Image (tube, rainbow, N blue to C red; front, side):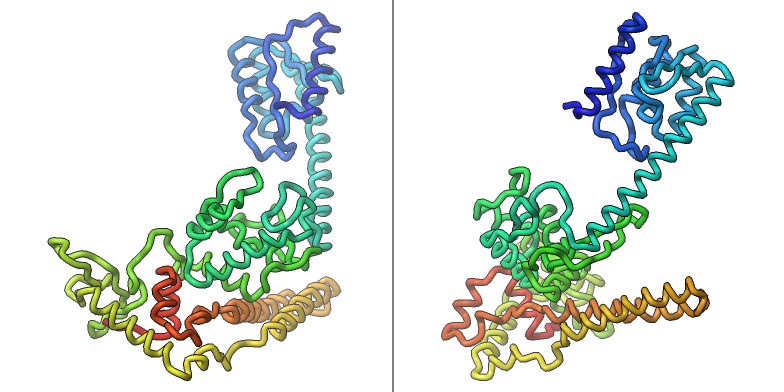
Amino acid sequence: MLAAGVIRQDEDCERLAEYRRATIVARFPDNDVSASGRKLRPEFEKMLKAIDAGQVDVVIAYSLDRLTRNSRDRVRLIESCQKAGVTIWLVRGSDLDLTTANGRMVAGILAEVAQAEIEVEGERTRRARKQAAEAGLPVSGHRPFGFDDDAVSVRPAEAEAIRQAYAAALGGSSTGQVAKAWNAAGYRTWDGHEWRRDSVRYVLKNARYMGYRPHKPIDRPRNSDPDLYPAAWDAIVDEATWRAVHKRLTDPSMSQPDTEVALLTGIAQCGWPGCAGFVHSASTARGKYRVYRCKAATGHVVRKAEPIEQYVIGHVIARLSRPDAAELLVDDSRPDVSGLQRERDEINANLNALASMLVERRITQQMLTAATDTAMDRLGQIEAAISDAAKVEVLGDLIGTDDVLAVWESLGRGRQREVIRTLVDVTI
């Protein structure tokens, strides 16, 4: 469906054709294509082919900046029109005969002016977006999951589903498993589709859920992290929880597969002297039973799986059944998250002050670089500590129960694996 602006421009072009008694043989509307010139324009490409094929005598456009969006397109259009002897009629502008030097000169001047206007408008737009981010205002667009249409007011039921998803992710569940849970509960994406692991992953990685407004400048690499600003809405999860999940989703060694894996795969280590590799589950040659074998090298450990699993589970259940099991939840080394956040804010403020000092020539570029490197190293340590502070209480409902085995058996495989990671080191 054509945008209203495109329809109006098309009508104006049609009136110009009627006034000059020209017959329209084809239309090439590039609908909803940014003026930045970064996107491919399929209709523009078709128009060039029509010109090259000698199918048109005149090209009618609303204005030159609607016709060519960058110097590359302008050169291609000039070459095609020159070879085919095609003239350009503009609703807003003079005719351009690109078969003459004067016509090409005028086209070049007009195009450069139009390009400058586009770039200035782009700078204004980018600054406005950054200003909105600094104010913590939401991005316009579809309704974020967990919030109302204003993207600020929290929807309690969806917010609770999001909290459960973060807890599940920290407990070993995959994004695919979270998607199944949300779909079963009747939740859908903003456009009415069922949740998939990628769409869940997008939600869990979005900093808006810890109360921050993400913003990535257009000139920043695509795979880089965005800038974060305090948001105008309430957080659904705390920052430590968000960072712990983000770390799990972005660190390949911590990711959880959607397919169920054996209890000790990637957890138990090979006990062969000098080998630090992990084991994985496999079957014997005739498929009679499962085994754990070393991933690192053939000829290392190969052991029957079931007795080892029962042995490990037995030790876990025994430890959790002891009267002092509650002490496992105590973590004296847990970092002070609020203190870390204050330190991070101070470092960022100092970096801004250093940048001002460089402009005022109170410090050298070399001094700024050295201070920035030190600060960035510390910021990395702070973010890692904050994410570690939210390690899920995977033992939670296993502590203080009268029947630890029953609770253990009710847990999913991912959660069981996290309990084992938390309590024991396994070497086969």
